[in-house]
Image 1 (cartoon, rainbow over the protein chains, first blue to last red):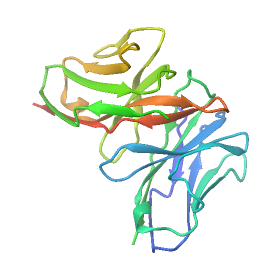
Image 2 (cartoon, one colour):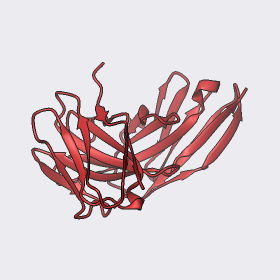
Image 3 (cartoon, chains in turn red, blue):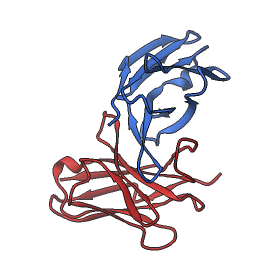
Image 4 (tube, rainbow over the protein chains, first blue to last red):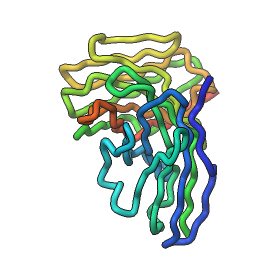
Length: 115
Length: 115
């Protein structure tokens, strides 16, 4: 069964450094998402992406964040200047269609630790 | 936007007994309600979902009920087993102008099955 994959599984970085988290969505999917989960807390929506542009973003997704689909398979989340509070698990998700009929499939996550 | 509340935050149940987790939502336009199970350190995985045109859906030991008037939905797990121990999240979508869903998650319920 196809799965969403993410790399790296764990990223440790110094405060102020840039990080890029990578995701490979399921190949025929058209809608892509990033969520984050601070340890012990709920999953929070960051951004959704469709047709090569952001379709919605949350208050968390400020100017330090950006997303890109640089080629036909990867979907990346960049944090320009990391802060301590960016430490969290970041999940990528994809769905084959928008609307209410389609499950969002989650990747295994990247644990980001900012020191 | 959507606001989803989930109760209880923790739940311990004897193996073989039933577990019930409840969620309320705020946006009356929401019409799709997934439940995700997250085992420790793993990705959220969809276990069951319900659409607003039905009041109940069952899949083996798992069932979900929906009361659109009261804006709440519940997860029922019967004949619980040790492998049911996990964190369970309810979610409700907000449909963006692009037609895709932004999922708003509840705060999660840590379910522990006592052998």
